[in-house]
Length: 258
Image 1: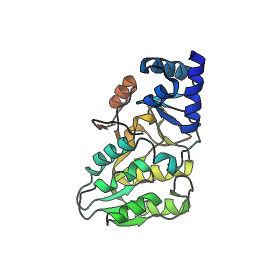
Image 2 (image 1 turned 60 degrees about the vertical axis):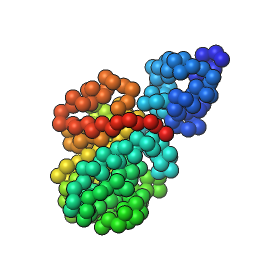
Image 3 (image 1 turned 135 degrees about the horizontal axis):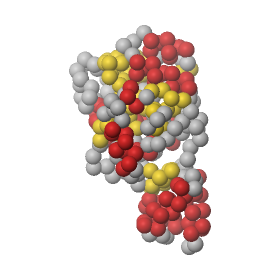
């Protein structure tokens, strides 16, 4: 297969799936892993895709946001490991804010602390929290069909009336200069407020978010500690670890089933 044909197959697969593992690209093209890695580098340099840990993804538009259904099938093992790490930070009697999203949802089954109170703006979080018999409070407002998150004036007012021991937030982008961001300014407002209302704030994000900038910033890197996975971009990861007041909590022994 000629180089341009491989590139076309790679991009076509990404158009269908949004994200593809290296093994999938090898199977689709019949090329070796080393050849596909070179192809991905060429395509990334041409701004056709973004390399991520173990594969590649399409470059997202600043306001583009994956649906809850899409998120639930992506980086599931990474989310599980991050969820375990985050859940271990919760202590007996904590009142915690858990943001809408699949990364944050993954932590709930692993919470072992007793007498925990959960406040959330996520429909998916409500169901998971009730399954585990946690005392659960829900903020009001408008529910987005894509991310199943409560946003708007009602949600802002409700969160303003709470204070949290810890907040656990999801993000769509992590940039060394721009900080943490999300495509929706109204969701950004909710995330920003939850961080401000918390004694400690954590952002959960897999390495595919490294270097991404979406439309609306909700916090600087120094405003929340990061629970993440190490990606292929060692230079970015080192700079992230060195960023002021950022604590990177690594997860180990990952075998992605993305």
